[in-house]
Image (cartoon, rainbow, N blue to C red; front, side, top):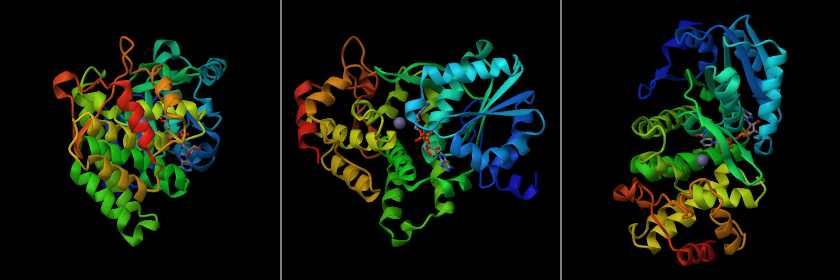
Length: 366
Ligand SMILES: NC(=O)c1ccc[n+]([C@@H]2O[C@H](COP(=O)([O-])OP(=O)(O)OC[C@H]3O[C@@H](n4cnc5c(N)ncnc54)[C@H](O)[C@@H]3O)[C@@H](O)[C@H]2O)c1
Ligand SMILES: [Zn+2]
């Protein structure tokens, strides 16, 4: 590894594992793995597109003992079937307990490969190499792994903390624009729940004319702060008994809409709609300051993200009931108090909402 690359790496020291961020960081993954003590046999799991673009550089960085496995692209393949196939391929290839899974890709690859790692021979280490903006600032941090079932998202899975996370923002240069936008939705969420300055910096960047061009320096800063926010939440509440629930802002309505669209809508797009509707809910029941929903809607629109689903309100409402976040049959919402702060500290960061209010907010969304 050239010292040039190593010197420009940033470490985010909030969790028990290393998170290394920097342009060119993919080249350091072999060193990071060695330092984490997991340099035995690597099973590199990726999807078809990402594997083609970045598989070779990662294979080189990992050294001799690496074999690649490719899964099909997209949320519709985040299934038990893909998990089973990958697991069977690992067994057939003779991978033992000294395996280290390396997950190279977006959140779909990270969630499936992480779940393979969580269960393979009762659990082997995983290193995440997130390649989408969403996976960099969200999915790769915090140890949630899993797959979807026809009844809903992420209904089967496990907590499995990674051995390390290595983030190279340079790969964002090939990420399709709609996926960059979808990742921005989660960045906007991080700002909305915890950091008004971050939220404002996204908004002012999107207002500047130069925001039409890909700005990898700006994205690198966005990613670093995004990871810090996510990691700071996860560090205090790894298993989502309290504060971590704030990360679910936009996700109760978001998951409902995502399922209703048969996963044709991107996760980030669905979350954008969810945040717009849930911020409105928060104002309607009086937990959020006035103008909170407006501020959130307006930055979402600047980012080119949707704020309404077009599905009938009663269908969305029904779909919220199978969400994992429902407890004792009651649907839970993580709602903002204002941009940068969440409501519900006294009630475990989840706020009960009457069906009529959800219905009204959905009807009013546009
Ligand atoms: N585990 C968690 O805590 C957590 C948190 C948030 C989201 N998620 C999950 O993440 C998933 C969404 O992640 P996603 O949006 O990254 O989806 P994804 O993995 O499907 O990636 C999006 C698309 O971009 C392509 N791609 C990725 N990186 C690329 C690159 N650098 N260049 C070119 N193409 C690239 C992929 O091939 C894919 O087509 C959802 O399933 C969601 O539930 C998990
Ligand atoms: Zn999300």
